[in-house]
Amino acid sequence: MKKNVIYIHTHDSGKVLSPYGYDVPTPALQQFAEEATIFRQAYCVGPTCSPSRAGLLTGMYPHSNGMYGLSQRGFQLHDYNQHLVNFLKKQDYHTVLCGIQHEAGSYTDHKNGAKMIGYDQDITADNSGLTEQELVKWDYENANQVREWLQQTDKDKPFFLSYGMFATHRKFPEEAHEDYPEFDPKYVMPPYPMSDDKRIREDYTGYLNSATWANESFKIVIDALKEEGLYDNSIIIFTTDHGLAFPFGKCTLYDTGIGVSLIMRVPGSNMIGEEVEGLVSQVDIFPTLCELLEIEKPSYLQGVSFAEMFKVMDHEVRDEIFAEINYHTSYEPARSIRTKRYKYIKYYDENYLKINRTNIDNSPTKTLFHENGLEEAMKPHEGLYDLLYDPGERNNLAGDERYKMILEEMRQKMHDYQVKTNDPILSGHFKIEEGWKVNRAETYNPSSKDPNDYLKAGE
Image (cartoon, rainbow, N blue to C red; front, side, top):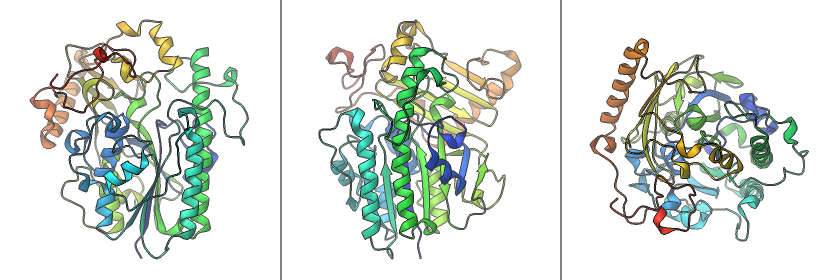
């Protein structure tokens, strides 16, 4: 009997969840991790919502699958037939969407998104009339929709279910789920390397509020799988798209941007309750599923299977992982390579090496940075970081003679990968196409109403 595949994903969570040691109230996720396999060194292919998810769901890097930027800003896959949903449909899987998808149009427009991607069924609850701060309640209702669907579905037909949550995206809810006490900012510590500032602590409590809703929604889905006898015949994937929506997290190639939670439960695995230290990329999930499901993988996949990691302790499949930025709200072409020890980042727009402020979500923390020189902060054209001594990636070693050979090696490895995957940035800068919504690099507010704050087609 074919195994079901359940893909559960949050928004903007990084690794800042209790299974990774953070003081974040996610007990249901913690329990799941103890019944599954936790990957300590998992990374996305692009630290912005649509490119990240598209990379996972096509097994291709954003510069190859066409998802250069956010789907709600006009970006699309080159070919939706390459999406995991359509691949599994050809293998006689029933495909179901509930909640957020971020590969087609607006992430809240589930009807058109499900149709454009090709899902067989959309069981998402109505979200009309909800503010962004209330969308965590939509997550909770969607979890109940999943439970009801699982109770009624034909258990003999394999299915792929995507359950996507708005949490922990901004705007954060003002209150935690009712089963949790109110968080007092005096007793909260923002995760490293955020500053321990009162305004940041107050902002971070909003993330904690949102995490409680994610946890309770997740619990409903997992409990339903167990109650319906599906838990032990399903590959269950929990992950997120990229790092937290705070400055120097989301939409950066630092580990705070590309590091993601990845917890998987695979029937028959030898690694239940274990941790995996080897490097993996979300681009590897598609080929891994093919091997686990014993399905021939399509030729377009660019990732590598890590299925053997569920059988053999300390098995490794990669020496390095790659990630990129093309567009978030503004154009910020950048590429990175990360090994266990080092990170190399290259920014391609040498004419604008200031911080792309629209690529930081508006927030009280962003305002604090803005009041303290964010407009003048700079990025290096190249960055090299020793992650053992400098996990916060603050000491750029690219100009240090002692690291010259390492810098050259990382440059060469990244170039080889770019050539292998036909990275278009090697041939010059991207040009804005009709239908893309892109802020100018120097703009502050990504939601600006001033048309002069946006690039025009051809620029």
